[in-house]
Amino acid sequence: MPLDGLTILEEPERRFPLDLSLRAPRIRDLYAAAVRNQWDPRTDVDWSALRPDDIPDANREAARLWWSRRGWGEYGAVSESPAMIVRFYRDRLPPEMLQFFAIRSQEEARHAEACYLMAEGLGGWVEEPQVADFKKSVSTHGVRKMALDPDTSVEMIMGALVCTLEEYAFDWFKLMVDTASNPTANRVLRLIMRDEVRHCAFGWYWLEQRLPHLSAEEIARVRQAAIVATEQVELTGYRVPWMAPEGEAQRVENEIDRLTWEAGLGASVEEVEKPVFIACVQRVRRRFAELGIDLPMFQHSKLGTF
Amino acid sequence: MVRHLVEKRFPLDLKPSLDQVWQLYNDAKAAHWDPARDLPWAQLDASALPAEVREAAALVWSHRVWLGYGHLAATPALLVRFCLELRREADPKYFLSVRGTEEALHVDACVRFANRLGGYVAQPPDAAMVRLFDRATYAAALDGDVPLEALVAADMVLRLSIELGQLRAAAAASSDPVAAAVLERLAADKARHLAFGHLYLEARRDRIDAAVGEAAASRASQLLADELAGLTVPALSPAAPALAAAYARTAEAGLGAAPAEAALVAFREAVADARARLAAVGIGLPEARHEALGPL
Image (tube, rainbow over the protein chains, first blue to last red):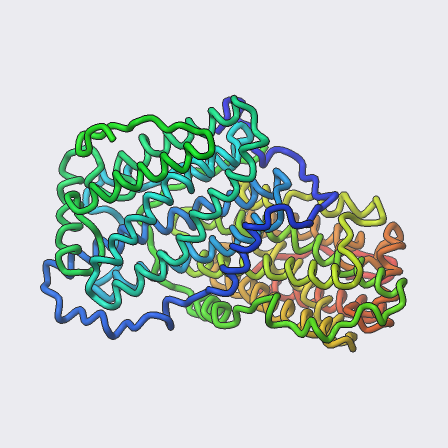
C-alpha cells in the first residue's frame, strides 16, 4: 500500500464522460484475437493420452507436484491480475485494455484449471508446497498491490509484470513445449503458450504507445520496476525453484522438476534452461533498449552476471 | 475507508465443490460468442431509419454500455474478493472469470450497435443520472467490511434480476433482428450470472447469520434506491426525461427497448423474485415504494 494508506479504492468514481473511441488499435486486435481463440481444458485436450499408469511412480508423483505448483502460479494471475482492470477503469484507459484483460483473466483461470486437471490425472492436486519455506517464493508477484497503488503507474506494472516476468515465462513454455513428450502435457503447455503470446504483446504494445508521452522521471520508474521484478521476483524463484535461495525447499522442488522433465511431462531443469533464460533476458533488454530504457546486467549465484 | 483484506493463498483448493456452479462455468465456456461474427450486423440498415429514431436508439444502446461498463470493473473486483478470502470455493472464481469476459463482450456488442445507429453517446443527457452510476461498486467488492454474501445478494441477485428482466422485456418488444439477437445473447449470459447468485447464496445459506443478513439487506436497499431513481429503467425517474423519451421512441421502432409499461411490469416482477430468493436464504429486503409502482 502507498505510504498514506490510500489506494485507488478510496477515490470517488467518475464514470463520465465515458470515452469508448478506439485509442489502442493494436490492443483492440489482441482482444479480437482472444475472442476468436478461446479453448476449453475439458474438451480441447485429449486426457486419455496422459496414460498415467504407464509412468513410473516416482516421475508421476513428481509431475503431480509440478503441475500443482504450476497451478499455484497460474492462480496467482487469477487472484491478482484482475485488479489491473479496476486500475484501467480508474485511470480511464482505452476500453480495449479492459476488454482484453477481462478475457485474459478467464485465460488465466483456464490455465489454472488445466494445471489442476493435469495434477488430478497424475494422482491428485496438491494444495501447498511440500516445504513451508517455499510458500514465500510462490505466494505473490505483487501485482494486486501495485494495481491499487495510485503512486505506481500502469506503465510500471506493465514493465514489471508483462514485459519482464511474462516474457521470461513465455520462453520457458516454449522450451517445455519442445521437450515435453507426453502428448497431453505437451498439448496443455502449447495451449497455454498460445495465450501467453497475446499477454506479452499486450504489455509491449502499451509501453510502446505510452512511453513517448512519459517524462524522463516516469520512464526511470518503469525501468526500475522492470529491474525490481527481475531481481526480486524472477531471480528469487517465483517461476522456477532452481533460482530460489538454496535450502531444503529448493532441493525438494528441484528434484520434482527433474523427475517431471525426465518423464517428458513438463518442467525444465537448470542446465537446460540457463542458456534459454539468459538469451531471453538479453532479448528483453534489447527490446527495452529500443524504447530508450537500458536494463542493467543482472547477477545470480547460478547464472553469474548476465 | 476501505478495509483491505490480506490474502493467505495456501492451502489452495482448486477442486470444484459446488456442482451446479461448476456446471454454469462449463455452460458459459461452451456458450462463448463473438460480437463481431455471431450477430447479424448486415441486417441492420440504419440509413433507412428516421434520424430521430436512430438517435434515440443510439442513446438507449449507449445507456446499456454505461451500465455494462460498471460491471467490467466490478466483476474482476468480485473475483479478487473471492480469492482474498481463505478457503472460498474454486467454482465461483472460475465462473466469475468467464463472467468478466462476457461483460466485455456485452460492452463490445452494445457499442457496435450504438455506433451503427449513428454514434455511441459518452454520457447521460440528463445530468441527474450521473450520480447513480458513480457508486464505485468495485471498491465495495474489495472492502472487507462488506460481507461477500451481501455483495452477492445485492449486486448479483437483486441488480441482475432487474437487468435481466429489462433485457428480456426489451427482447420481447424488438422487431429488429439485430436488436433481438444482441438482446438474446446478453440475456442468456445474464441469466447465468443471476443463476450464480442464486446458487451461491443457497450453498452458503448456513453461513448467513443475522449480521450478514443485515449487511445484505442494507446494501440491497441502497441498490434498490438507485434503481428506483431510474438507473436501469429511466421511465422510473422524472429526472431522466431525455433518456426515457429515447426508450419510448426506440421501443416504438422495435430497436431494442421495452415500452414503459412493460418495463415497469418487468421491474416489479424482478424485485418480487429477488425478494423471494433473498428471503429463502434469510435476507429480508426492506420494503420500498415508488410513485409509478406502488409498494414493492
